[in-house]
Amino acid sequence: MLTIKNLRKIYKGSTKGIQDLSLTIEPGDICAFIGSNGAGKTTTLKSIVGIHPYDKGEIILNDVDLQKNPKKFKMMIGYSPDNPDVYENLRGYEYLNFIGSMYGVPQKTFEKEVDYLSEQLDLKEGLRQLISNYSHGMKQRLVLISIFLHSPDLIVLDEPFVGLDPNASYFLTKELQNRAAEGAKIIYSTHVLEVAEKICNRVVLIDKGEVKVNGLMKELVSQESLGELFRRVTAHE
Image (cartoon, rainbow, N blue to C red):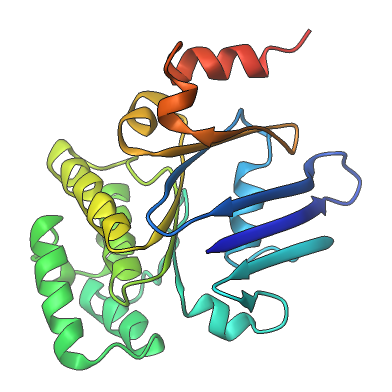
């Protein structure tokens, strides 16, 4: 279980950030994490994965506190940012080998996963190339391969479908559903609400750094679409 309690992060000289945010992600959840630009989505995600230090609160995954044991916590997560930032002086395979060794993935498991994932995401030939020659979509697919290598317990995705073609998008959707069925916890941030409504079983909507909606997708969209819910909740006078 991922538990976030009273998380607060305010940037210096600004009122923007997150205010006492609390939520729980259960095993098997694919949680749509949505909000307007500047609502605090990326700040929250970067706090969860240990990139942004936060002012107060607790982030606990399977009884492991991020602040008390950051190394153990981070070994259990996979993170795909909205802008894939990878080592461009490496070849694709070299980058994956680096990530696999960092997480202690056994060589046989590594080879099997890389072969399968690169085939499904149409990056097998691309792994031989320098990352500096990659398109945005190729970098996105490389990062997605890297986060699945060690079978993370928590998968955090910030706009993961940007730059993916229909085949890669279809595979990612199925892969997330399969990982969730195996007990992974998934947080998926996006502006494409139609996709979120189809693949997510939970939804958390934040506005101005605060949780405004937190519940089961099927209950929340029984009377209106996710897009209609979003517009209603975020309409400011």
